Image (cartoon, rainbow, N blue to C red; front, side, top):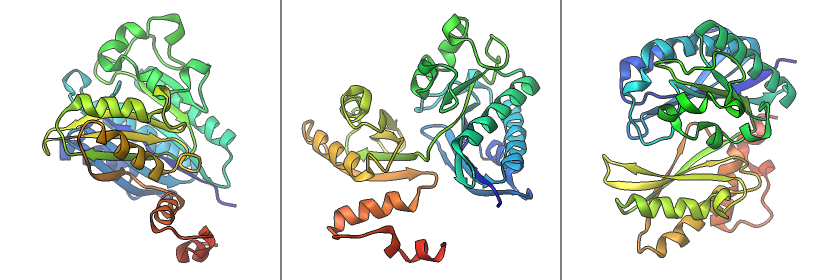
Length: 298
């Protein structure tokens, strides 16, 4: 049985089209690897790539693209709304077909070890691959961002799992790990007040007493003159997208602002959208077996 794994590397470049194409090139035209999507965001100054394929082939392509990103991105000059600590900020592996979580963890460790050695790049393992409990949460690993990582990495509890104990001078630090499918879901508000977005994000995310499988921050969309609550839904089967959307709508009323739209970054599992559609349509006793495309893939 063919094994299929997904990888969703995030690169700290969302503005320079030439650089973006160079970084994405290693994912094109490769046997055993399929580039599904890549999305850039100028405000975030970040690109999210989605690819699937055979584990060993995906591994080779990812390591090659990491090398290109290190050559092309200078973090000392990087500015953007999204938290980041490296040129290749995070590299998650997600088991898709005939791949166990244990196999995804092992692949993540192989990539981390080889990339750290090849590029002299410090790498943390996170999520299911984490070597210690305090490294599981990406937000904790990334706290301090690129600018603060030079000192943080010298602390004993934050020594990298692979690579040198000093940050790469221009590429910073990278996190590599294995996890369940994640949905990057953002909700836009009709205000330019970032304080409001931050307050709502705190009320929505789990660490602030909100939804269990939701991470959230406030972000400015300068070109549009509005702000957004940017979320990572880490388990959409237990915290549905519509719950976070409705909670943001309710909290926004406290500040006299409205939701004006939402967006999904990268690809999303069909079940996450069907679940939301069923909620808003009020469909009773609906199951994924009634989705045409789902039955066709059986």
